[in-house]
Image 1 (cartoon, rainbow, N blue to C red):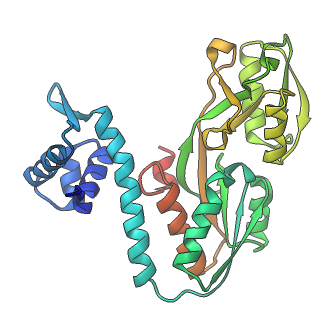
Image 2: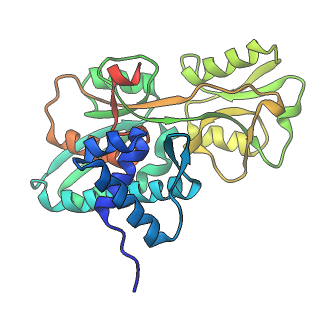
Length: 295
């Protein structure tokens, strides 16, 4: 017979991973610590693999345990999506979402699932850089926007962090040029400022050869070996090579991705889409309020 993993056990495992403790996880899932331990032992018996190992007085996830956590998150999201599609009130109408096109890699599939869960809701997606989306929020031209967060607004809900990476073509050696050619966004792009500051900090010579807000065009410039650029991890494409300190490129600070709703907007469609995006893409544990994320 096939092994069926208990969703309750999956939720407990995720709580342990996110809280870092059996005790705190027990509080979160409203169980006794002994019950939490029994659930984890049951999972280990089912899979025939140790999910935890002792480190002093503490237990930490093994490689298999961390792998199972990722599966658990996906299973729970699918479960919550299925329940929400039946329990949610019949939503209908039109909601406007803005996002930089750097983050579009995961969106077609996500929006397709949202459309199936809410077939009477029409979603319009507008791809523009963060600075333009913040203006559109103020002008009520979009209901909800995904932005690269660098302290622009106190209404932001940070829900994802990714590594910002130096990238080049895996078929060219443009990164080895004495003066590195760069393909970056326009002057008010935070990644552009970060990249230039990082190179200046190690006195690495560079020149700007390509400027664009258009992520697919920048990606093509990278793949053709025209220039080096910086991208979040989720935007990497086949044919791209990540450059490291060993290649002469310093580590960059992570990207924080946030959701912002239009000021004063009471829009159940925007609220439903926000919950859906956070549920699908959150990797920091529930979409942290700004006051927590900034600590």
